[in-house]
Amino acid sequence: ASAEDCGIVVFGASGDLVQRKLIPALYGLHLRNLLPSRFYILGFARSDMTDEQFRGRMREAITAAHAEHPAAVAQEKLDAFLAMCRYVSGDYNDPRAYERLSMRCSTCDRDFDATGNRLFYLALPPDLHPVVTRRLAEADLTDEGPQGRPWARVVFEKPFGHDLASALHLDSLLGRTLAPSQIFRMDHYLGKETVQSVLMFRFANAIFEPLWNRRYIDHVQITTAESLGVEHRGGYYDNAGCLRDMFQNHMLQMLAITAMEPPASFQAESVRDERVKLMRSLRPWPCGDTGGELCNWVVRAQYEAAPGGASSLPAYRNEPDVAPDSVTETYVAAKVLIDNWRWQGVPFMLRSGKALHRKVTEIAVTFRRVPHVLFGLSSKAQMPANVLVLKIQPDEGIDLTIQAKQPGPKSCMSTMALSFKYKDIFGVTPPDAYERLLLDCMQGDRTLFWSREEVEAAWSLIDPVLSEWAAHPQRCPLHTYPAGSWGPQAADALMRSIGARWRRPPEMGGTHEQ
Ligand code: BG6
Image (cartoon, rainbow, N blue to C red):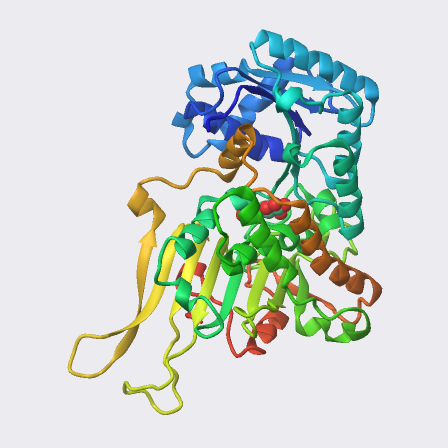
């Protein structure tokens, strides 16, 4: 299917996400001639701006996003793109603003000869999702025509709710105002080319799936490390924290696609059903009466300044818009068990944090060691395990470590990597996740979007931990780690509890293979 003619109404148009990700992604689609022929972008936000001022900002945003490849900002192409951009301002809770919006949409439909299909993109904090959804419905903006033509779709940026209760509240509101086919819950990790290639890798190759279980896999490490701090998002982040910002969504999705059962087809419902089945099999962490145990499963920490160290970031508490006595976690490491036949007893070790040594996202599957050591090692030494690393970003690719004989008369072994690098093979870096997902919205394909059931399952796991932390802060202390390090020592201890070490191979800026 190709993208259908439509207008995209972007809420939160003056915000960070729109300028850094959304508009550059739409421009990327424009450069590759993938936008529909009849198309427009209508920004909506509180700030007063004319169409011209909005275009000026979007021009700056696109130029900044392509700073490394200025040639991509061809003036003629950019002018043609900006000519499709318009703006309307208003308060998100003011019905009159939606009347103005409705009129602007009709004018744009006419001016751009569009068919009335509309995509409403809520690049807004979760507390505004219910308000905007309700106001859109009251202004009849989310009504669809007969047989869904013209269509109206609403995209919700993560996080979906602030906790389980608010997520359920939002869901019940959505259930009253929108049909399921109109709802797109966006998690940009699902749109990453290399995240999708995990599914291809698992289900389009015969050799790994037979090994993909408790008999052959020792443990799995999923890492999303960022070297940046909270930058100018302190206000949002201090209310959210790492568990909400990264774990409830991106981390659990990566876990789901790594561990889910093969779907019967690649249709949206089949794939989403398998993801939700997996999420429902995650063993709840000990909270409430058994809460004292939680720190043996989930470690939280916050970064500190490290003068003279690897990072020049200030302490998290000194970041702009962060409370000076904040107890918000900027790092989480967790042990997750999956209660099903395939994965019984296999620990999935997840870690994510800001201000870490370097940016890297990867899924590393460590296989069990060989049962008997033949080659020249002392009786105490262990043969290194095979590790399969699905490298999500940067240096997208796949590595499989094997043991091989070193040349020479002795039986010396070395660990080698069979390595596939996306860039070397395909000659390009993968396209941006937002481009793919925006196209999917315009085509009505919801495979790579969260279902209501997934959101609930994910919050059901996360919510008790948030409550436990709030109710018993002393049981699960907030550790600290120096900015630019690999995280707190407590996370290393968590890893030792399963007899392993966090990966810090050279390409992760470390000095040893785990
Ligand atoms: C976002 C989080 O969803 O993902 C950010 O809100 C985080 O805090 C970002 O920095 C990471 O995305 P990526 O694509 O840069 O790994």
